[in-house]
Length: 99
Image (cartoon, rainbow, N blue to C red; front, top):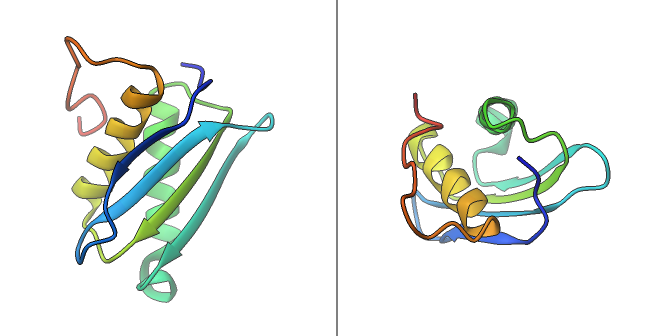
């Protein structure tokens, strides 16, 4: 899947995260701001990388503002941002990343 447009999902409320995905510069770049970055930063980046790999996304800029979200929330926000970037608003295959 190719990212051409910017997609955003989530909030910066407690236990949530805001994910913005946009066109990359030839590779995947993940920029993470998190209140738990020292404890879980590498794990969060790994979760995001794995989910992008599942959808064959190899060129994207991903910005994440994490407020202590669990993995399933991060995956759901990433998935929603990706679908929004693709302008997919009907017959959305929700849960593709969670499997």
